[in-house]
Each structure stands twice: as structure tokens, then as C-alpha cells.
Amino acid sequence: MRLMGLEQAVKDLNTGETGLAWVDEDNRTAARIDLSGLEGDGPTAELEVLRGDLARLLYEASSADAFYRFGDRIVSVERDEAGVSVTFGSGGVERFDLLIIAEGVGSHTRELVFPGENQPRRMDLASAFFTVPRAPTDSQTARWYNAVGGRSAGVRPDNRGTTRAFFNVQGRSHMTVGNSVAEQKAFLRASFAGAGWEVPRLLEGMEAAEDFWFDDLRQVKIDRWSNGPVVLLGDAAWCVTPLGGVGASLSLIGAYVLAGELTKTDTIAEALASYEYVLRPVVKKSQSVPKLVPRLVHPRTQTGVKILRAVQRLVATPFISKRAAKALTPAVQAFTLPDYR
Image (cartoon, rainbow, N blue to C red; front, side, top):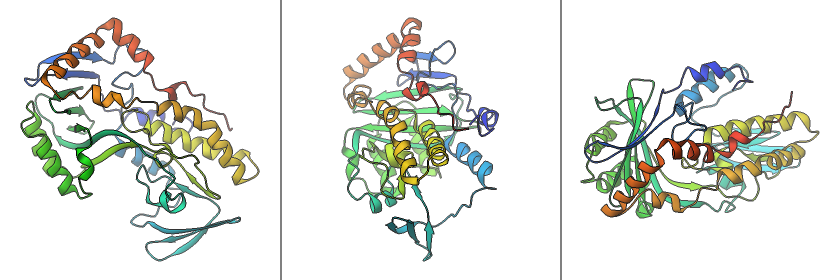
């Protein structure tokens, strides 16, 4: 972002989140970690920016140099040694030297070009995110609540005067839920019935939310990122899931490296090979979230919740929190950005 001249603009979009508090059903703080004084990101990054704000910033900065086509999709891809022919849902067919697929974890176009090659690593966790009206109990500190049955809910501040809410359900009960928003909301209403805390308020806000997002958290595991003049980028290539907390950073770094390699190599094929060689190690480290983690932080019994809160209190002590934040700092922060200038 600094190289694009957007560093200050990104900082201006910071949500202002100052830390995380784990709370009980009566909203009493069981443990708390503040961002100040931590070496590393910890549960709250130094810079928290809403996805929509980041997308809008990048769009506005690049729209003068790039053509954006909205409301369309790719329905077929034909490759040859000289390039790629793309057929759009609107009926048009166009020719390109290179097709970059950056549609996210559930990419449809990836399956057209790499059919059956992605072997997703499921994290056994369903997550939902949406916006609700701000309440008197909301502040610049995020709050996380655990309920029995492998459930958690929480709220985080934003820079719009509203609150960002989330639900998590551990296990695989969500695997039978359909793709419609109505079905997904019905699943969450049933899953969080009687969960306590401020869950009723969040469920009510969820019904009216226009930005509702729900998904099965899964990593993309694919042995190659390119196939001829077609290449995968971002979550379509290596989704880490929100558990890793580096999705936007990795996508931006990936775009930078891909563009850089295209400028320094003689052929597209060489550039795509170099792009993958440079990024594979940091992606591998970023995806190394143990599948046991979602299960451990989502106990199914009251005893399990009590044990988790005891662990949270221990982790929140200054001695442990500072060391844990440093140890858990994402691998992407240690990545040395190549200089293509």
C-alpha cells in the first residue's frame, strides 16, 4: 500500500479496535487483551480495515488505469499457446494474453480450468459476519462470548457508527445447509437458540442485515497455481480462512509479486513459475493453523467453557500475552517483499 501511495488512506480507514475481551453470559469480562504494549498483532491487528473499505480504496485508485466489468461472469475458458479465449455470461467472447482468477475460495472459474484439483482442508467451523446497530454495551474493544455446544458469538467496532457481529458453529452440522441466505439464517437461529448473552440482539440484527455472509471455513489446497496462460491469485489459490487472519495481506502481496514477475521475466510462463516459487513458502506457513484450534476454542460442555475461560485469563496476563502475540505474529509479516523497481 505504501508503494501505491495509499498507506495514509488505509490508516484513515482503521476501525479503531483497541483489543479483545472474552465475556460471560452476563457480559462480565473474563479476560482481556489490549493492543497497546503487544509485540505483534495478537487477536487485534495494529491496523483493522473493513473489507469493503479496502476494496473501494483499491478500486478508486486503479479505475483510471483498469477497466472494471460488473454484473457478469465467465462461463467458459479456452486455452492455447498464444493466450486464452474467455466467454462471458453476457454472451461476449474476448481474447487475453493472461487470465488471472481471483474470485475467492469458492471460485467457479477455477473449477473450469483446474477441475477437481482443489482438495479443500475443512476447518470444521461455520462462520457468519454481518452488521448490526451499535448498542450501549459496544465499545472500541471487541467482545467474544462462548456458549456450550461449540458455539461462539461476538462483536467488533467499525468506523461507521455501527457494530460488526459474528457467529461461529464448530463441527459439521452446517454442511447440509443450502446456499440461500434464508436457509443460512434459519440454521443460525436454530443453532443459537437459548445461547444467552447478547445473542438475541445479534439474531434480531442479523435478520435485517444486508451484508450477511456465511460460509464453511476451508483452506484451498491445490498443487499448482497456473495452467498455461491462466493463474490463480488470493483466496482462489491459497485461502487461509479468517482463522489465519492474513487473507487481505496475502492477496495484496500476491498481486504485487505476480505483477512484479510479469515485468522482469521474458515470458508469461516464466513469470508464473517465479510467482509461485516466491510465494509458496509463506503461503504454506500461513496455512499451518492446526484443525484442533477451532475445536479447542469452542467447547461443547459447561466444564469445557470454564476451562477455556481459565486459559483465556492466563493468556491475557501481561507476561503471557506479550510473548504469545510475538509468537503468533503471522508469517506474512516476516516476508521480505521483493523490489521490482
